[in-house]
Length: 406
Length: 70
Image (tube, rainbow over all chains, first blue to last red; front, side, top):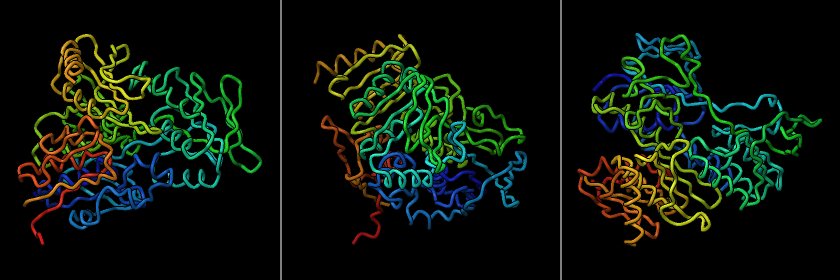
């Protein structure tokens, strides 16, 4: 096949899409528009092994040197797309040039939200890119035993807090919600994950907002003012309050934008135009829900799915079971499925006290999810049950049999 | 082309995604360690092996071609 493909964005979904295209026999041009100065790299270590200094940047590339040679990708480095002509599939770049493709893949990801009032203050960090992580890493390394304030107890905030606390910093997490990660994990497991911070001496302030920040005479962050009237000393402030899909360049393109690029069940936004990764919103028919998923695994699967669409191989709708992991302290947290607030939760193996267990979620009718703390094998077992679409009763029966059988 | 499945056990953290994608090749057992069930599988398992490598969150799986074997 000799059609041309333009991939806008150069992260995980883009890398896996390009690789799957080449492996599938696509021999036309592949152009990747890369806003950064780095070739695609893996983000999860940016809040963990890279941030702690355990790994260096040479561990992060997503494409190996031999793949870079073999795939013959036309990289447009430090270049951003500024517009898309949907009818001709022509992407305008910030240097004024254009690139046209038979297929366009939108993989521009998402950008972290900023905390209002922190502009221009040194020592305030967002964490998304390798450069972000490098900046935070250098600052933490230069300030042993620093007072680190993390705003947001989501995955980024929790992982940064864990890494900083493990390195000996004094860490406080400030979270506006009463329960961390409640939307993804439900109230019970969200609260449990929050409790892991206390095990490691990290102070988690729930139901607490940030009302202001104060810089010192040197222009660096000095303190964070909280909604309960208290003030926290801060040598370093890390903001992890979610991301916004990067779609501003598509304003006026005619594509439907609504918290992401709105696609059909095949991840197609318009004829010849697909979206993959954090930026894509599509109806996942397995769950009967229009979703946008910010997980690593989704970027991989969706990138590959789009490649197969372009190759003419994927005829089924894209209907994955969302799955993610988060490594915090010595724990591996995993969740598969799409549990909803108010779902039933049942621990099926282990216990919270021993910090090793798996729990399943159900809406009374169906199994809707599985949560694991240091139980990867069980998470995958129930992920398969989710794929089979088992009832809640059958899931409980399976758990009972597994308990009595082992 | 024949191929070999190589797991870097210094990177592997037994996330078990590979077991989900390619149960013929990978198994995470009760001890939470990953076992490679076939390290030189039949070629019809290549696509599954590639999917497992792509989806490994720790990038711990690589496939090596065995064409030019010494």
